[in-house]
Length: 474
Image (tube, rainbow, N blue to C red):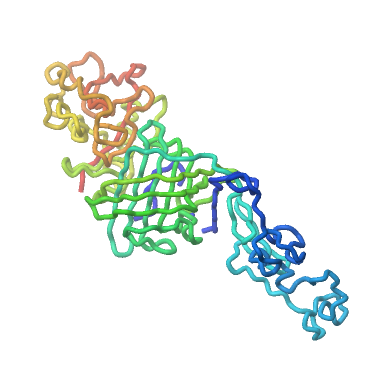
């Protein structure tokens, strides 16, 4: 499967190492405000015969001085280079420690370092850290700021798994039920990452290798978004470069995927929709999540319904979620018909999709017996008259936001999309409401499972509503 499970307005291999300081402050002090002492972080500390960090180790014997030029043979202990025989025996101005008349060659050493001094006056590649990062004394790029955002709250989880020997994948989406919500994705991809995910219970350190620190190459990927809507994706995206994923249960379709994320440190990124490479946003936000648990039932991907939701009971493939945002709080009926007729999605081009009939829309209802297919509401493709077919059973529906779907909508758990958009809450059907004095069609509201008819006349109060396209299943 292409690595594009997340529906984003803009959707990872520069080595990006992010460590957000979730405790303490950005001044170098500890969480309790005490000063942290280091050997070798100031000039001359590795040759001053002092124990600057008070750990019992002096100068070059302290690990903090391991990369210092003095401790690597590049300086003189007494500071008087020309007085020592080994400093410049041939008098040419070049260091000659072995007194052989030739200048010694300094060999850069960047083993285990991704920035900072290479021991010979140069810098270890890539020579500089990413925006918002600084090089620590051990040669690692770390975040220099504090968290701009903390914690995560969600109440709905969807999980889909595709099992295959070489290219299997699993993706979990955990989101809140608000109209504008934040979302968290846990994704595992066979054949990617270093190490590759095992698809088994266990504990996994996030961002431990360069491959795991970019969305393009990660095998165990944690992505988050803020200010998200079901149809238009998320305003900001974040990628986790540190933390721990503990999987307690992982099964096949029908089983569970459960676990806990702890110590998450996420940086704001952009994700290229073609290459999936994640790039830190200059001056972007940093998000810390101390701990959040997830637990969801695993569904199998729908056969031959790429980019949509397959309803096996009705043998219909639904656009999921609707791919285009709305203007003026929705979309006119004429525009909805035109959009669906021209839709290209999942390998099916224009003419394959259509605006659903009222019976097709009702087949998507779940949790409200009176308006589900076969319920007391008499409006169907075969009965469209507003007087003869409609009744209180259609209009009354069920309690608002009492359904089994995301954000408590009256559709299946695997369906996503706007339940309401400003004043729009009905989904258009293509079925005319006959017997009414002006042009009107039947429509379904998934927040209350109502079935009603709406005027399609320009300027009417119901002119702009929601739309979801459909096509016959495989």
